[in-house]
Length: 198
Image (spheres, one colour):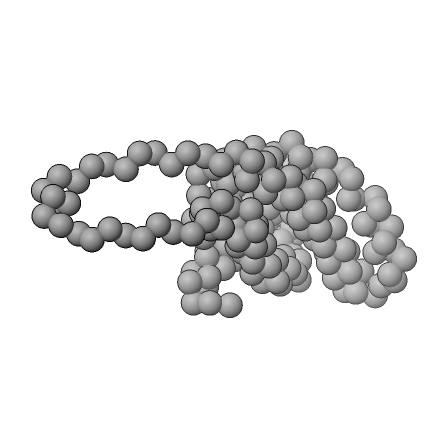
């Protein structure tokens, strides 16, 4: 992991921790139980552990998509012309960059099918595995049943929110700024996810 990804990883982990606290505060309010009775430290740790592994892979996925499907990266860069005095006198503003819709739609397709399915399956399986291990009832058949029971409802919920968020992110940002935008969106999604999955 490069040094440039560490701040984004730290930001996401802080926001993930905050989303767990917010979700538990909401749960406390809805059930009218004290916050400390609702807040589960082991689940909090599990949420952070899961994200420690998910975030770098998500960053790598975004860079991979850009490398594979971004026309700006695949085309050779034109040689910079020699700087002369005219360039110093009049700076002409650059024209707005044209959006490569084909590239955006391909990346969106892979994000919403392959990547979304993988992330949703992994969060359900990981949280089920950790919850059942703590309870002493761990069996892979039960984790698989949890995965079968939870995958499609979560995937359908994700399709209501993430295509639009990903479309905006893919159109407006390169890989690293995109991760910051998605981190903020992920805060709200994590609150929902924690309330549903845990």
